[in-house]
View 1 (cartoon, rainbow, N blue to C red):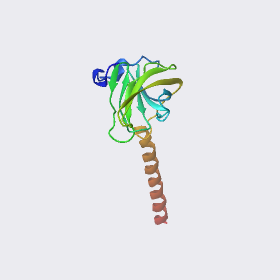
View 2: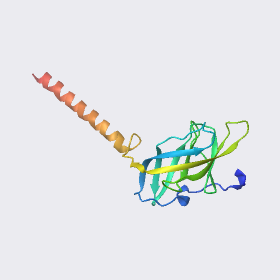
View 3: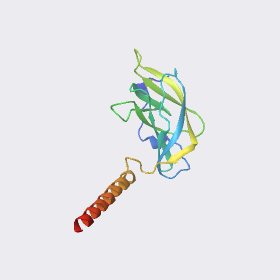
View 4: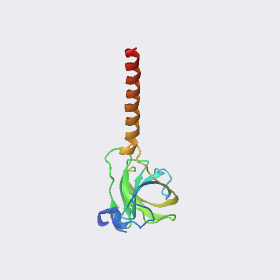
Length: 161
């Protein structure tokens, strides 16, 4: 087996991802994980980004101690510096498990642990902007502006009487 240093760092995760029958955009999908000791878990549903017809998932571990993942003979590093470890990895299959390796530093020495991930295509739903996008912020601002205008109109009517 190759050491982590012998496994090349991944470039663009979309390059190694499968083609999916979904329009480009951001989705949520249920993902199941098998393998390991059962102590670690991943967040599900997880964010799935489709670009150019290929899918990449943001895998968030239940621990900040994962320092890399190996997927399709490429090494992926975390995309965050604080909190639980998050990796953007290519989706290699839908509705059937595929192998990944997670390296954890939680034990006395780092350990590469084998897992299988299964993405359930029947659960894929498109995100609609949410809190991070314009659509998620525009409506509350519009409601606040309308409410302020209505209050001002009531105050002005009362004063003019």
